[in-house]
Image (cartoon, rainbow, N blue to C red; front, side):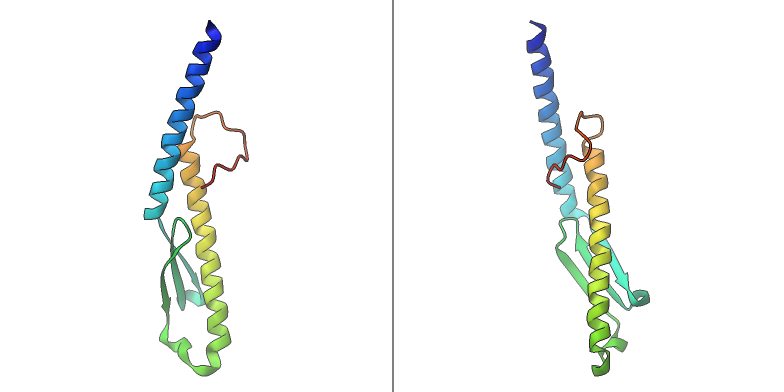
Length: 110
């Protein structure tokens, strides 16, 4: 009956992983990352799920002839914030799944 014990152990590990994953996903909502561009002239704040929480623009960029520069800086700041959010989410995932037998590269939805 050793096989039943192995199944029970596997079920327990799966349940533990599910709990850790739920905790990690909940903590991502509280995570805040900031991306900046133009030497800090534009900053964007995202939560760990990628939702924009804030946007700051230096008033010097409000000149009409700076419109395209401002648009480019907003996109660049958002991209930096998104990369930081993805890195932070990956770290949370790593912490949540530490010690669990998960194949490398398996996407668990974070």
